Image 1: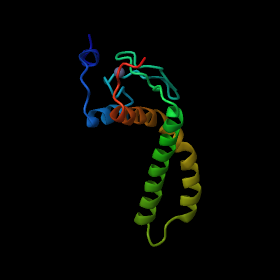
Image 2: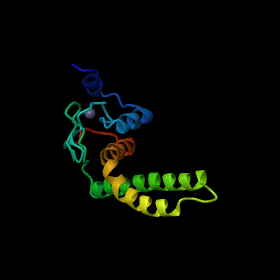
Image 3: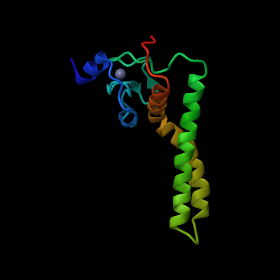
Length: 134
Ligand SMILES: [Zn+2]
């Protein structure tokens, strides 16, 4: 039995920090199992080790997960644009920020998709601990 399965079986709730670190590594926030995704855009219905559902049974969960992806992406986009403007002040590359920022706004949600899914799952798990919903 793997460590993840032992932890999952023991019913130990991981700390918030552990859940977030696991989510950033695209692992199950509950048990740390690495195989939550079939591909970059396709997530399993449940963790193969602990059985945690990746789309939890609540109305609006999917909309919340997509909104989290967009907000997460836009925060990173804003940090990059402000960072470039501050570093290059007083003459920021406005054309680069305009066109590069536009491209970044389209690409970042795709790049961050699996991370935002696991992070949203971790946040959801913090507020609504898994109670064996299957
Ligand atoms: Zn798991």
